[in-house]
Amino acid sequence: MKQKIQNKKIQWINITNPNQKDIKFLKEEHRLCPSILKEYIPKIKRPKVETFENYLFVVVHFPVFNRKTKKTVSVELDVILFEDILITSYTGSFPELKKVFTKCEVDKPVRDYYLEENAICLLYKILDKLIDTRMAMLDHIDDRIDKMEEEIFNGNERKMVSEIAFVKHDIISFRKIVKPQRVVLESLIRTTTKITDKNLTRVSAEVIGSNVKIWHTLENYKEMIEALEHTNESLLSYKLGDTMKVLTAFSVIVLPLSLIANAFGMNITNGMPFRELPNGFLIIIIIMSFITFVSFLFFKFKRWL
Image (cartoon, rainbow, N blue to C red):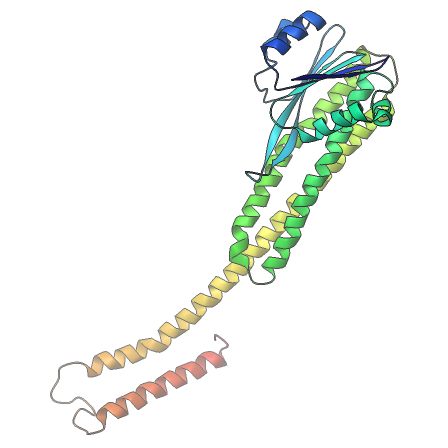
């Protein structure tokens, strides 16, 4: 689907789920290089900036949270940038970009803000908005980290093992997508000077600043989740060690009792103590109880129990 917004200065064309008709349109209307048309529909894994005579071809990826799978996935945004024409396209769902485009369609002040100078300035403003909207996703991760911290110190360490793994996966996926953005954005800022003479230092600096803010926040969350994972493992190890200590003490206490029971259970007719006494069984039980009590006091004295 192809949509278009324009004023006297700029034209913004947004293509959702591009097909062969869209490639034909780009070829006939904008005379794009065949190499771009060839790789326009297939997914491009690595972000890049390619410079041509009077336009740029930019590929940048953005993290998008999939609510069904509860995972962070990468959405590819392809950009063809002339001085007065911006063509954006993506495959699948990109609600943030769709929201910006819709606001520009229906709200004149918003449209005047975005389509104020030229297509390059428009692209910078869109990128800045898209990067800023990632903070909502990071806030979601922050809330999950706070909840995990509370659960860990409430004694639910075992339940948090899988939750920590999910959040770590989210952060790793986020970092994998965001990290290459800095290089692409800096390359874009350098190459846009080839298609415009206007000074766009302010808006370009805002884009870089938003990207740096996202990255520093991710680094902070990475350190927090690693610290929580270490704490959770330490508490689990402590509880496991405490359980093993109790089991070991129980085994040590039971060992002499088993020895006594086995000894008096031997089939010997002569020489076995208490065998001929009427209260022999009771005496053996008292001896075993005494040994158990002394062993228990010993472990308590040593603070092993």
